[in-house]
Image (cartoon, rainbow, N blue to C red; front, side, top):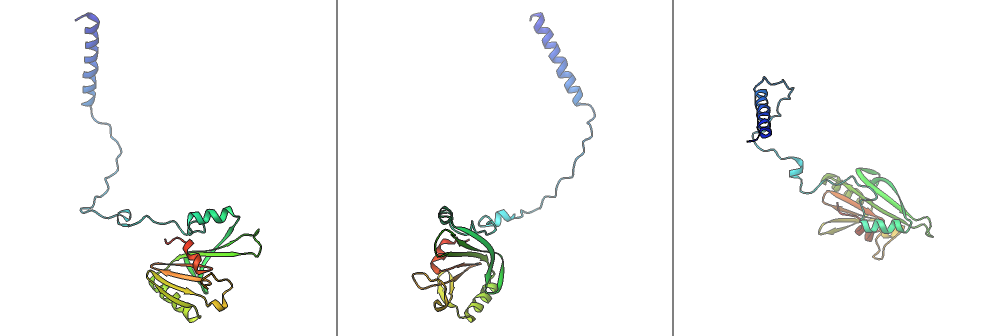
Length: 186
């Protein structure tokens, strides 16, 4: 071996020896936190038990289909967001949206709304509307209640005015029954 390599090997050996000796020194105290308790059996988290991701709170921009929102906005329609009402009863966490286009002659108005409902709230709301003369129609996936067309300000081509649709866990409303197809079933 040549002299430079011997010196390099000796230096490297000294560095390794110093490192090993340093590792034998007393450890420097480090502040630690106690470990969190680990359950003995797995516990399901909400993310693991939810069948679908949580939906954002309802707004006038997310209760209707995206293509419908874009179409309304491109034609100059604007909305006013209000609480969801069934008669005089405000439904918490719901939203009602009145859309208007000031540039359109005749002042057309569109209404779309959505709110979550419990089974008890659904039963009470349906009973209240029927007692006020609203017309009930059963469907495979829910119940429609529509105002008497003789008193409706606006009716669709099938003769329906303002109509509520009660699905499992929610209610929708539109100014005419045909308008319900625009609302997302959340």
